[in-house]
Length: 631
Image (tube, rainbow, N blue to C red; front, top):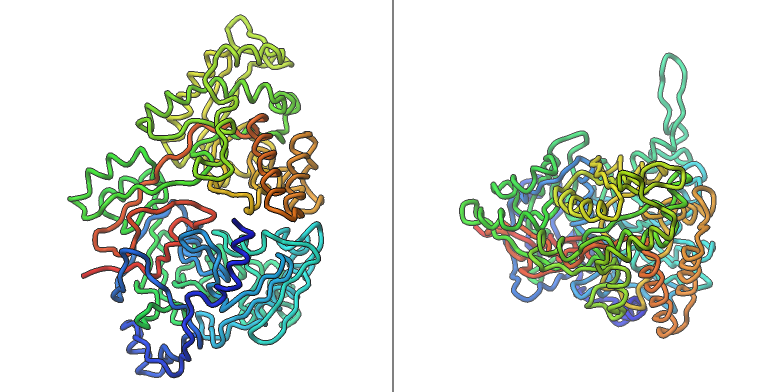
């Protein structure tokens, strides 16, 4: 799909953009700006919008909205203020609801051979503080951030490297720039369209204040007569485009965060210079404010059921559905069920980089991982927790994907206690007098499985697996913790096994990058140090020393160089086959629907949607800037 998406950009370069000169158009103003415009503190919409704003075409069942209101949502921690960037989903290019990549912030993009990308900005586009958004913001990112050793010690992001080759970046004029490589970079557009995107621009006019090149006194602070220099740390702290925790940092998103952390309530106001309009020339967004209130994650389902959120899916699980349905009439909301596209809703991640040498050797034995998978009664989990509506099996692409094969889903994933015991016996993990198996050094085979502690659902699934594994002589101990603590313990090699969701894009096709299947990111909980090694070009982490992991890396590289779709298809199938055989990640169930709670007065939220991180940005592809409240 991704290769075809790139070429879709050529005829669709101006898709959704009407040829209109803002200075000559009559735009409908959001009433909230009336006084500022009248006082001369803010220019009228015709001067705030680009000359060619993006004209959004509403989908089936949607209708033009009314201005006003506050969208209240709940988040489980302060750092989730970044969801304003995820949901706002303003990107250079972004996915539409059919998962095609189309221009958004960009007026157009010309992609040739997945090697040369010529991008044209919208003339007159401005940052949220009214300053011009031009190619100087791209030049600043490339010259002064990415290629500054103090700000970027490891050099350009790995997403911008093709076999170690950095792009050639050309600033052609104030509105036009070009990124090019000698070999194809099929990941370039998808990464810029991602939920956590590759931002190749920065608000130069703001960040230059913190850059020593432009401000010799940047980072200096007087303390007892001594000057402390830390300009790079200060710059990096100010430059949080994705984290969205610096209210002073200009943005291109539909709403601007005005609350500085730490806070238990974040307020975001509409961006006066947002680049999208509807067909009636109303500047978007329709909603004036978004309010994110921080609540204990375990309390979010109850608070949502009590009517405290206008739109909620985050921190809500399928097992909350019945409870939420009961509160609909009383608290004026409806509960939708959206499809999910992950390869696994629940998966176990053995840490193949665990520090303990004995455990490392045990977990790297594929027979052990296969045995643990065979010993899970997935049918029981499905029936008891998901009413039999989930799909049982491995962490792989879902049935709607053109790459799906039944064996990828079922290999080593069908409940077979005897086969599991035989495999563990073959590995020399014999039972002791107490019936518990022993590690090679005599320690009991006790597996601590760490979770983010955000869901009782995970605990319920682990409790059922604990009973299954006890029967084959393996003891499981769930260990809830906090998300960041969990990740840091996995990254450092302290955690033995963890729980998370599986492949993000279970709907993949041959032209979408298979990098999720190869050790390409520290965030991959099964081999974080392998991923770190790739991300840092070998400067940190560990080189893959498992034959199949090394083969996955090689295949990922071959996919990037493949000239035909048939070649890419073969590579994908080989990678999926390796994962099914090796059980690097032990999937349990997939296809679990996501409850989405919507205030009855909130309009233009799709009744049916796909709730997915990437691609999708959860609500992002459905453009919350077009959601609105009826009276």
